Amino acid sequence: VNRHAFKKLASVSSYKLTGVLVDTGSPHFVVESADLKDLDVPAVGKEIRHDAAFAPIGCNVNFVSIIGDREVRIRTYERGVEAETLACGTGCVASAIVMAQSHNLASPVTLNVRSGEQLLVRFQQKDDGFSDIWLEGSAHVHFTGVLHYNSLFNRLADSFELLQTPIH
Image 1: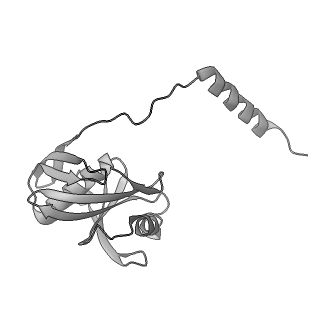
Image 2: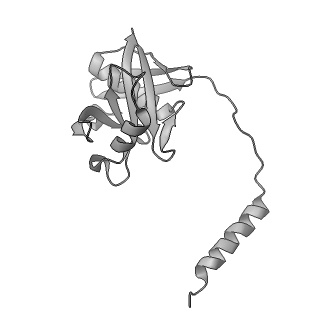
Image 3: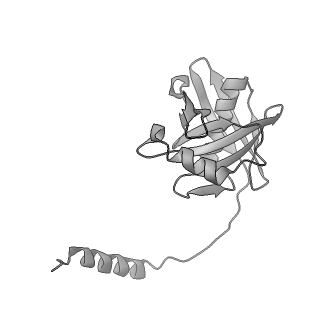
């Protein structure tokens, strides 16, 4: 991630927040906040996500605070989910490198996510940016299912047929 890809923005949304926009596979706006515990992430995150500064696709919003040496607490509002999530990998990467740049944090950076887990971001920091970025953390199965291809295909075909039917 090239340092020039970091874009500092001020007075975003009616909350007049300042943060850094960086793309780690998807766009993330990283905002430092002293009090993450009482922050209304769904409300504030939603407004920032839809702010004109991020049009037309919007962005994910990460609220972060440093809680120790190379340790950050993070809460994330994710676009697409349109809610606060328990963790976001690309958001942790974005937040770790933004905090490393703005607070001179060395690798690795530990991120405490909403689920209670800790994720670790390792990176190489150079004059022109960050490279060799790795995200480490546990993985859990929360859902399993079976996709019946023929049933899905038939439903899609029926839907497509309906779309092709002229309206009189």
